[in-house]
Length: 545
Image (cartoon, rainbow, N blue to C red; front, side):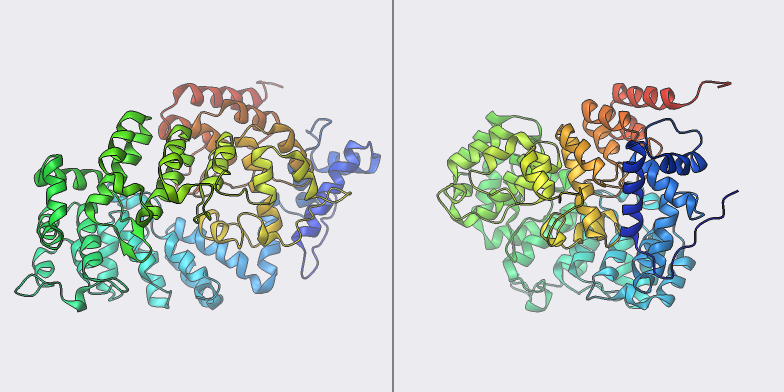
């Protein structure tokens, strides 16, 4: 039996990745030495050696069961082990292992650092990203871990309680109130559903007291926000009370609601559909405008262009300059949902979205590529430029630009990796929980976007140059590229990944489900579930073989 190689005191993950790439190249070139190394660790492997298999060989040569185990050990030894500790803390939160989380915080106090944003990311991990956690408190929230983090001094800001409110997680909101980290504002009282304390925010003449306003907001904006929070959490009595105050400040609101179907129907709709607070800078849009934006988004979801046009004609003021942020929100929604006709309609009608104007900040181009709708990019780039980076070039199929980001030896030449999506790693750290290896993040996002958009020649090119086919990439949380294909019914991309050996047993972060599970229970796409099940079965060796 071969003695495992020892790791240096401060091992380099990048060096180990390069060793795996070199082993794959040498094996493909017919090197007898490389073939012997592979045979010693993977005797069951056939002639081809993927990068994933090469990494497995490197891991086993160093005495580890798999690449992820080796990676974890390297991260544990690097930079005081903070990256490793962060990943472990996220895992402890997911597993509801409060003792383990406490141990990690004690050993690595920098986990709660506000400067690096790790503490905020850990707090966010205790709250679901789903927009309705009310029916899934047990599986979707981690109150014990949140309590520990608060007591340990983790930063709790507006983003935390806004997320808790948006997910309708009443127990988590009560926990925040009990720990004294919630501001005593009208919006928070409305979310909690306490009618008497809501009424106490107004003086005898019905004016909202300044002390009850949300931080940075005026009375009207605070009132709008509170009404939407009450609706979001389905506190109908509180919402009805606040609507009366909204109407008193804005008589035009009463007319518009009455011209629609009346206040009772409006309240019922807002409490049932719970549209989120829509911001215009620091201000919250009025309830009626939020309702109209929700109607427009709903018509997009149903691909109902006639209804969409009807609402725009009825509420033509929404196309004006003061509501440009709402227009951008609609464009982004359309880009993520592959609604090109709706984008064209908005761009034709809204002056602020004209190609002749300086472009407003907008992520529509990125959303289009990320969700597999790169065909919308030529339309969107009439206004918003395509980011000049590797992932976007891969997603839209610009092979010349993709090649530009690699040197003659096939190594990534990204200049500053932070100039490439996902940028400074905010999405990776808080959403995907990737380690702080920005080069690998860029490669893996580029691979995912190339696959999702059927740029398979580019995807193959990236796999040969270090992209990880088993990357824990997802549009929201760690899963795999195959999970995303399963959810969107993307058979071609799924087949490409399966043919190239993607690990079909990978589970997503939150539900611990395979891609087949996502197809069957998430997308309710039984044909896709059967397709994935058949592919998995075909990989299993025949009995007795």
